Image 1: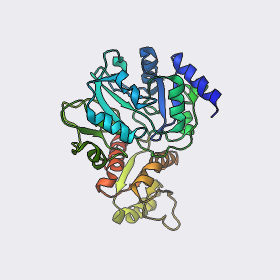
Image 2 (image 1 turned 90 degrees about the vertical axis):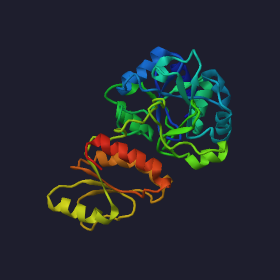
Image 3 (image 1 turned 30 degrees about the horizontal axis):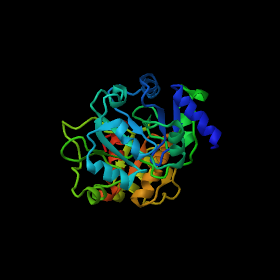
Image 4 (image 1 turned 120 degrees about the horizontal axis):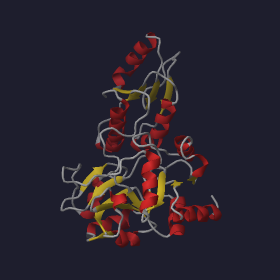
Length: 327
């Protein structure tokens, strides 16, 4: 993308229009976060409920004070360590932050994305951009520009500016850490782990929210879901399950990380790396490929239950709930 492309995209943001931008996590559907009418266009395009808050993407950590008040020292330390990067901080919002951005809450989610093209756009724009994942609400997040075009072809079409920054490096959404209360809480797991956070702030965050926690993006039980039904199968049972499925005269799409394709297999097989970071990087693209295969079902080979796989298992569990088959 050229400097002229970036300048044109920033001008569209200033005009209240939507721009899809790459981040290191997933592609976002962005709007001027201080323009309530523009923010409402995000909700309309995604079909997203209005009480679901958005994350504001900033060009640098210094702008945090324009969006949040009573900022704890822990937030400043984490921003210095992990920004730009896949960590969102939930803080008390400044009074002039639109409630359309916060879902009507007194907190706001902030991060500085770790993608050079996103940072160029944010610096050219000069302010905060509200940018949830650039997909229809509840569906698979996009990790390439083509995913975004496919998602909105029938609704926004060529009216949507899509900045192509290549495949996303992280591939799943940011860790969301709530620092608006006395106890730090991870409200959504991601690439930044609880242990990494604790190493900076000197105490371990609680691993999940409670009834008093702010609402945040991606926390619904059913989310990130394909249109095809899904099922998760442990590795030891995968081959037997797929053989039985084949003998029933049907085929499915398989997302595996340790099991190679069956011989003479009619199923569509998608292999992902066996390490958590590599798996996360390819997960959403694999789910989109499997969803497009036209099979009767998507079968996911279960991944380990260890802490390193926590963010991946979080996304898989929500996708399975959204796809309509109990994992």
